[in-house]
Length: 151
Image (cartoon, rainbow, N blue to C red; front, side):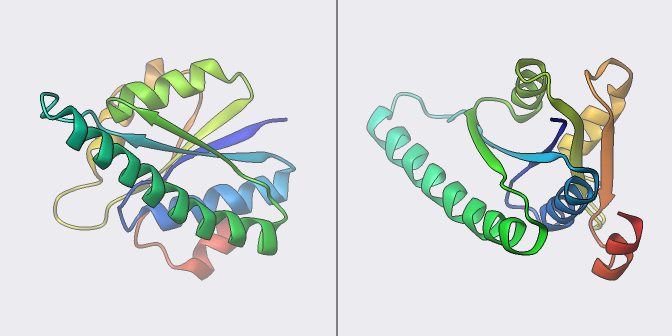
């Protein structure tokens, strides 16, 4: 089964990317894999603190995932899977895609503020020619109704 890979992070635009992935998956008989990446800690010499921070990040990710997963299950009939990785986000996204041949589309949300679309969208779109699958960029300020029309 083909899967949409969508990135779960703390950005507002993540919500539209989740919606898009779930709606497209439901309409095309695909699955959804939700990936969240815990960035490397800058202060590795505080091992005990880093472990606590990592555990807290995992708990936060799992709580956010459950909110999205419940909506996907209840409203779209999709049973998403969660992958939590540690490392540099772009590298971990590419590794997840390469490790799962069923991932057919990467879905990212683009920020709508003056700071630009976001570092992941910027980095991955610049390297789109060498990505192992198509990249779909969902505007962060796209209205829900319009998103539903598009999908």
